[in-house]
Image 1 (spheres, rainbow, N blue to C red):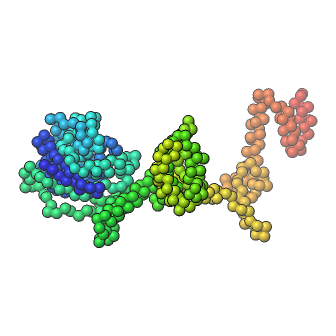
Image 2: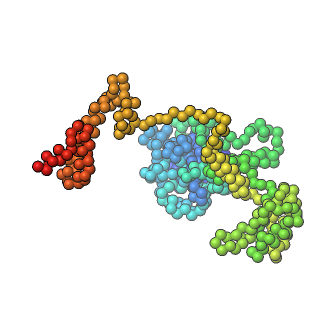
Image 3: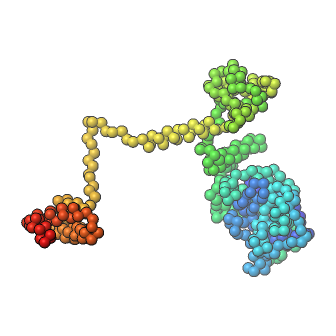
Length: 438
């Protein structure tokens, strides 16, 4: 029994173990007949491990078995089939996902590498991939985020049942045609597959032209993904056309030798052999930047497969955007520095702007300053007049003086304070001091 999964990356043909796993195969087959898996997202792709799908919600927390429609709500899930034990030995093994209760719904996964012994006995193996290995390769190299969710939507578009050994129940509703996608079903915050291609531009073209167009659009999608994850500042950034990449060099070849050899084609801006940071040894490849593109193109045609220091080198145009990214970052740093610079002072002829000084209220200001904050009744914003401040000041000084006298501290300050107060009150401090001695 075989089923074809038509995905956005190509077709995958699956053979089911309907004799060893009748329940799981029946559930999977009936869901395919109902077009349940149409437009399901590969919501989790772990490189060199598994690719998981089968959840209509696209979250990894949904999906129900077909037995719910046959037997009611109590049959949302079915028990896993443990015997006979089938291990994950092959690449492309198909297994139902365990919902942590040894039960299965609609979600399943495809193994991307062989010999995954850690999955044995936990999930029910019910089939294997027999065709579409190039599609598995594309799925395996998909760029994902920290939750293993791909940045580019990879979906199951359609399912085709090639053979069915089971009888179809009469209560099972099977649509006559594949349903059209709904907005809720295909809604995604990632790069959707239908955003890449324009059907009007494909019409009237040959198969080779269509293939080139699809490859170009896929390259644009990969560039957008690199921009999303921060590897590229801009998706439209291209490698420079005047930089050559030279590899398979001899370790004894120096920068000066390489520059001398390649300088006969034109003026060289920079010639650098990449070396190990710790040891300084040559890594046997270099980058050569010419002043113009024509000189770089001429050196590419003339110097490829040339013998230098008993080594046949390989010359190609550089695909690295590190220099362009460095220029972009340098430009952004300059713009940021310009914004951070203080503004120029105005010219002497220009009138200075009026700046109103905001005075902060201070409770310890003198009486003259406190009068500025009084209302028409002579009270401040606390509702007190100047006599309240005088009383509070006297009580404060009296408390400090009494505490200092009790501890025997700073008697000179106390005498000075008493003298000043007696003078203010019109008394002679000498009479007061004589009375204290007597």
